[in-house]
Image (cartoon, rainbow, N blue to C red):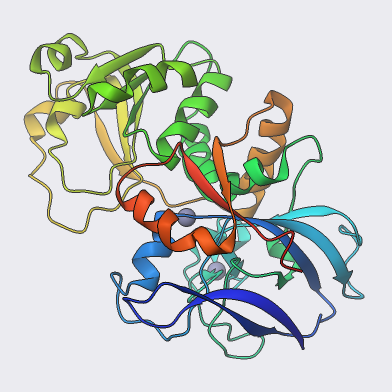
Length: 351
Ligand SMILES: [Zn+2]
Ligand SMILES: [Zn+2]
């Protein structure tokens, strides 16, 4: 066992506390990682505040991890001490079900994927997993990613959740040069969706409720920005898009967006709204063979593909790097949508 410094939450209403936690000894298949940077995801806030169900405290969140290998087990040949590596949302899965066999560990039907935090680590110690707001983590080699050296390590951290969550559907639905992609919402996920779709050669339309985000969307590379409250603008955008990534996690009416899909177009839900949504009008779906789909992060092979693609196209997230004493303010600013576009916790001086 080794001790890591960690930022933990001890109740739904308390802020981050600097403390320590125990990491398991490096097993034969394990990679022991010294964490340098960890992105702050909205899932972290929902989890530590108990908004997605009761959780065992103390809880250390964080699943956008970039670090440096400091020790490897005897069965590990793909990683060496000193390598730059990443860990995303998944640290284990059953490894036997159809989804695991196909490299979709995120959809594991056996034990279910074991989350990087607030998961139950049955294979090792049965303990609750603790995430990346900490100085080290020990992860089985099957769930460790290689992070290309050409990418800035802090700005690469959000690729491990926000990046793969948007890359996976763009790839699954086969976005190609010349396709028209829509992105609803311009937060951590949305801004990655714009960059990745552009790099794949798509023309990109951003839907936003706020006039103030028009310039920001264009700076990221959006070809068109549609203010979704403007009925005329939505009307003009009808039947123009092949694929839409919906990153909005609040309840909203999908029908005006479905109407902007071309024949065979697909709207993919990435944000998970807590409240019920207005019903979908089948009269919009049938005449143009439109689909409504969902997608959740991505498997390990796709995550490595995404990192390599980002290195090839020089893509990282736009980030604001913070220290541990700023976590509480960062959470508040995330709640206020006051970040462009991801906070990343710098752990390099904690060790
Ligand atoms: Zn996340
Ligand atoms: Zn499985």
